Length: 386
Ligand code: V47
Ligand code: SF4
Image (cartoon, rainbow, N blue to C red; front, side):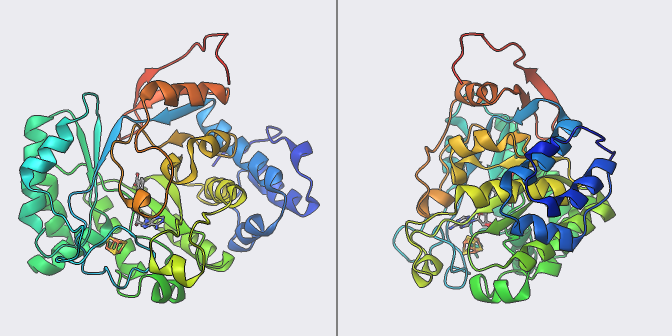
């Protein structure tokens, strides 16, 4: 990262203990895990935000990206239904509400939205949804929508397919790429710490294996995103350990496109009940802080994305001044967080995204899945209300 010199609004920093970190950020030096932990500890959210904003502006100017994408969740049947205690979406095969799309259902859902440039496809670990299920789906989608990018299957799903098909991770990825997979989403990472995983996702792919799937994908030229699920039982040290593992892999491969912190939603899941947290989502303070620290600590990942579905469009708009340069797009029919208590709408029109970005004093840019600019909405009508 190059130095920022005097571009940091130092008068916004009230906690003097942040000044040495500001100096490092100003000269483009990498912040250490201890400094990262301090960014999570200080009550000076505006100070942390000012640093993240300076880094973001140096990299992206006033541009804020969004993509016209559509989430498709083909199956909620999942063998980890009983052990991922934070998940409200999964069902056992015979449980009420369990579903698995036929190909025709997947194609019908994909065709429902006239303007889509990316399908984001993730689901449960379903024994009946192996390599051929997804390969057929991707081939069918590419035939029907040759120009639409397919971002599909988390590292956890790729490892599941490899296990049930008795194939290597690389062979599964190559076969799926041949069928139409373009990039991978960042889910399934949760929090890498062994202790946290044992509490919230006991049987889920271990941290090192999640990292290894992404490493193999990057080596094959399949780029991906990365995430962290925050706001449950994790400590600040757990968060930093997680971010450090992502930063290390990015140093090695450069394959991550974007980082997306995911705010835990406690409704209708065992963990929320255990913690007595039903109805209480993460706080706006913690949401903004996670986005800003992601921007500062992950100095080698170009894009930080806010998932408005989880944290609301209102907070996501504010986040554009806290280091964020990407708004999750025109999502259609999202299921995973709405099962867990998200009260946000299920989709948002492109015009509304443009209005939100302009209202934050930024320039909306529609992007493709590799962050290439497709359309820039340069001039904001002067009468437009923020
Ligand atoms: O891995 C599940 C999370 C993730 C809950 O790559 C929950 O562009 C909150 O990774 N409360 C899947 N979160 C979604 C995901 C994602 C989302 C948007 C964009 C991208 C991208 C990736 O959803 C899971 C898990 O961490 N999740 N249950 C819950 N109750
Ligand atoms: Fe299955 Fe993913 Fe839910 Fe875990 S988080 S139960 S792997 S769908």
